Image (cartoon, rainbow, N blue to C red):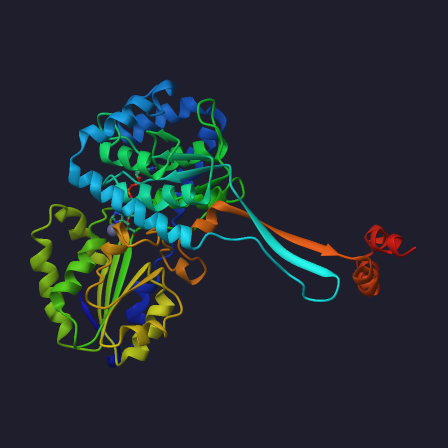
Amino acid sequence: MDIIRLADGGYEAKLAPLMNRSAFDADIDRSVAEILAAVRSCGDAALSEYASRFDHVTLTPVQFQVTADEIAAAAGLIDDATRAAVDVACRQVTVFSRERLPKAWQFSPRAGVMLGEQFAPMDRVGCYVPGGTAPLISTVVHTVALAAAAGVKDIVVVTPPGKDGRVNPALLYACKVAGATEVYRLGGVYAVAALAYGTATIPKVEKIVGPGNAYVTAAKRQLYGEVALDLVAGPSEIMIIADDSADARYIAADMLSQAEHGSGREQAVLLSTNAALLPAVAAELKRQSATLSRAACVEAVLAKGVFLIEVADLAAAAALASRYAPEHLELMTRDAEALAGRITAAGAIFLGPWTPEPVGDFVAGPSHVLPTGGAGRYFSGLTVEHFFRRMSLVRYDRAALLAELPHIRQFALCEGLDAHGNSAAIRAE
Ligand SMILES: NC(=O)c1ccc[n+]([C@@H]2O[C@H](COP(=O)([O-])OP(=O)(O)OC[C@H]3O[C@@H](n4cnc5c(N)ncnc54)[C@H](O)[C@@H]3O)[C@@H](O)[C@H]2O)c1
Ligand SMILES: N[C@H](CO)Cc1c[nH]c[nH+]1
Ligand SMILES: [Zn+2]
């Protein structure tokens, strides 16, 4: 956990370990490709084999799907506080999604022409819910509730089973409340493959959404085109920009919140204009991490995924943050709103000292499925719009068609496509 002072020079070299966090890993890609090919050719038999190899459970195909009885019983297996947390998160995520439902629209840009768009929800989507190191109950809410708000008919959840072959009951309760229509106790690459290709027991989906570890993320990348996908949502990241108004205890706590996710590839980065804050945060990270139950996960990230950086000013911090494009960016500065306006790439921005990142993970409203590994420069987080098909609408009247006929003919001529030209010209006869 070195402290990096950019003012001392060697800017690019010092930032390399932070910036070079490409999602590509040749070994992972190779083993993922093998698993995908096996599921494609052997279907359910491959799923049973991989469930045993990676998740240490024996499952026959009839056991893949969690039964309706098991889902119904889940509510009785958890306490009131857990039910309330799931209910509140689901309500608040749904409110946010409904607020931004896409609506059909049209306008007339020139006489005799109407242009617009209409939307229709997808019919069948798959939501990947991580469960390798922790059952991510909230991820059910942050994927399924969006699909439900969009009006998707079949909402399929896949998630790794526990060692006893069961799915966490709170996660099942969340599936019911959020609106999942099928749940499969299958995880990792092989579950994503099943959703993409379909098997005898699991009908293929149109789109796969949701986060996962480096294997799940690589699988999604390789399946692009076979199925629609959302974004690269891999190992969690947090970056915090802090000035001398920030509290070292809060900063360390928030950095650890993402370090504990457990894949070992998480990152937590502090950019501060206040030199004194950096050693104070380093001490707090050590002190607080010792009290956490997932100390081993956190240790791995503290060893190579934590960066404490002194920056010259907030403008430099904003520029560096926008280049890094963190999944989560916290602004613990005096005028957080003004600083937010200078950020051009981040999955989600959390403003002020009373907005710790976990409010976004759990209850705030926008989905916590966000781009990682620098993908925030070209992807944005999951929204309800991801669950719609968008169709453009075009209508010309005769006069408008005749007015543009010369240009249509000219394009057809240039492209050597006579029939294109004729289809417009025939209407002028
Ligand atoms: N970016 C986001 O929006 C977001 C949201 C939530 C979680 N996350 C991240 O998701 C990740 C969840 O990871 P996880 O591991 O806990 O759960 P996971 O469900 O993503 O992965 C577990 C599965 O990985 C597979 N696997 C493990 N080792 C493998 C190997 N050697 N080869 C092939 N497959 C293998 C297994 O099938 C296992 O079931 C964390 O890194 C977390 O930070 C990201
Ligand atoms: N921080 C994760 C997104 O990177 C979401 C999550 C789920 N549960 C806890 N956290
Ligand atoms: Zn989290």
